Amino acid sequence: MDASVGLRATPRASSWAGQHKPHGAFFSGRVPASLTSEKPAQRPLVLGSGTPMRSMEPVRGARFKGLCCKKSAGTEKVHYSADEALILKQKAEDVLPCLNDRCVYLVGMMGSGKTTVGKIIAEVLGYSFFDSDKLVEQAVGISSVAEIFQVHSEAFFRDNESEVLRDLSSMHRLVVATGGGAVIRPINWSYMRKGLTIWLDVPLDALARRIAAVGTASRPLLHQESGDTYAKAYAKLTALLEKRMDSYANADARVSLENVAFKHGHDDVNVLTPSAIAIEALLKMESFLTEKAMVRN
Image (cartoon, rainbow, N blue to C red; front, side, top):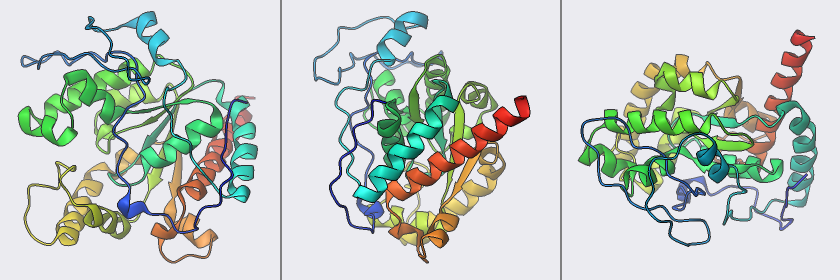
């Protein structure tokens, strides 16, 4: 198994509140812009090595697949405690044969840790990691989701998001962190169903505290309202979850951070390390895949 794991000891409490999504998506091809009437100018993407690519037509089929299935260039090393590294390695070895090269899609609310946890899972599985929001940004040539919402619209973003998921669904051995609202379109589920979907279920209070700590500038669905950051984040997250709960429940496996925290003897889910959550995700994946195999047989 191609999974390099650092063994540097890490503090038990994670710094969720200070974590931002990494800026460089590990992507070396072009995702097509949506077929809407208003299309921004396409810009060349950048390889993980930093070498600019020449402008190209939208990449489809085998050509897109050849670009995306390469091992993600520039993947950052993730460091765990020695105990966590051992468990992650063991669980990844258990899960890999059952996955049969299928992709893994992480779904959940904004701020739930999909990117952070997804990168850990990708590393220990020897998979490539992609953030669908970053791929949309690169495809339309705009540097943030918030700016896409402002310049165009949420519908424009969702159209491009669906195209990204469609193209990624033809790949193998990827871990994909999806946007919080990706689950609301049934067509996206038809793409993600080709792989394995994992829901990171985080209590709203914990999500609101994480978002309040870093601000709402990068969260276009939260940033329009004035007032106390925690209060407005909690109110908006509550409304969003009510709309999305049934969609999230479509996931193949659910990782409840409340349950993980209880298992580790914590009252606050925000003290969990991302590695502990990744371990639980691997356990849930193994359980789902094992049960599915038993039903098939």
